[in-house]
Image (cartoon, rainbow, N blue to C red; front, side, top):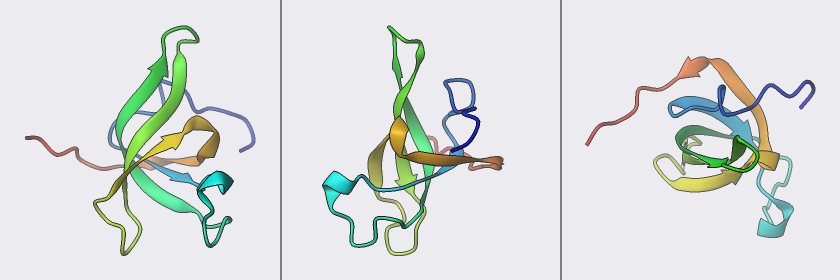
Length: 88
């Protein structure tokens, strides 16, 4: 991931991330990069940083499904891409 700039300030609701599935989940293609829009951020009060996020999957065939992504799975934050969050 190079220089790590992912933290509670950058990982925010509406931001789009890329991530890989955990090997323990036995993905068919462990190198596949997934995209998701952050819907919730889980932070550690002790470390004052992000431990994971909940995302709405953006991949074709999986659109609208939700999953929890751990911090260690996140590959990149798509800096210029933010989706409007749904209300209601």
